[in-house]
Length: 380
Image 1 (spheres, rainbow, N blue to C red):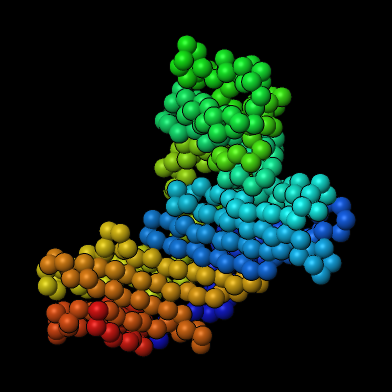
Image 2 (image 1 turned 135 degrees about the horizontal axis):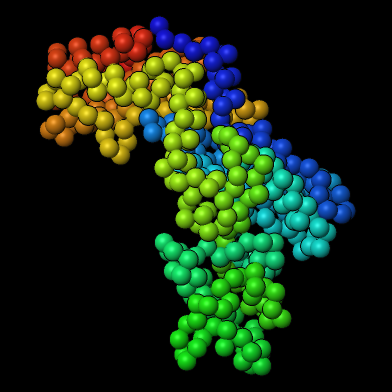
């Protein structure tokens, strides 16, 4: 009977990137900040990591309150995403303080503490959607830049110029005629959009008219992290343009993806075959090869392992699945799950058309190979 030891579970959890771990989330956004006794309290965390034969991806979220004594005077949400490419992103989703708490320095201290921890955890970049109240102006003054789209710098500069012009147009009612007349030549030449001046939202924020344009205005931004580490190994950071193209740590995307794949395999190495997506997928693909024309892993769902953590970095769920498609389009889904007693149990979801002697023998052979003896059989 397949089982996994507590020591192996601890090794799995230890290899998960810090930004996916509940303990990191709580330490990053808890504590006192600013003047007047304000403190951040993390109320809820979630962490989800998915392994595939090619790599891993994941998300984590921290929700909390800003407290003054026993009173709630604000709330926040922070989301982390580990992309399958290897890029690690934090999204500053939400922070709102009661109007009476504005100007206490809370937000600056709250974010400064987090940025220091981002550098240690190997976060590539932080993204924001600036909108609330002063957010459109404050984020620009804190080093965030518009995300330009395109495969080269000319295209990205043009994209940023278009977005800046849109910001100005939306705020036209807040800008007096004289200020707009001074700004317009930096946006247009002969009625055409300029891509050679004012391509930075930070530059716009520094202009006398910048506050009027950006306060309450919506834009999406990005800020690279001056990293002390990557989440998998020590590398030097790339610039904002590299990050916008999806390149982490000055590595080519293929190299970054390879490093993420190695990290994924390091975690999988501590799992029994029944919970390792590669071993699980290969076992069923091989044993079903000569049944009904064969079955291959589904291109979209394939084989994957899900790891969920709860507060204190305790394992909340560890499960794997393999989705296969036969030559005639029938779908077979096999699942394994770590039970509370440490054993691994299986489930089959098999179309009635395939519930024959040959398929049953093939499935039983795969379960034996994986060491799973407790299997629940379901009709798909």
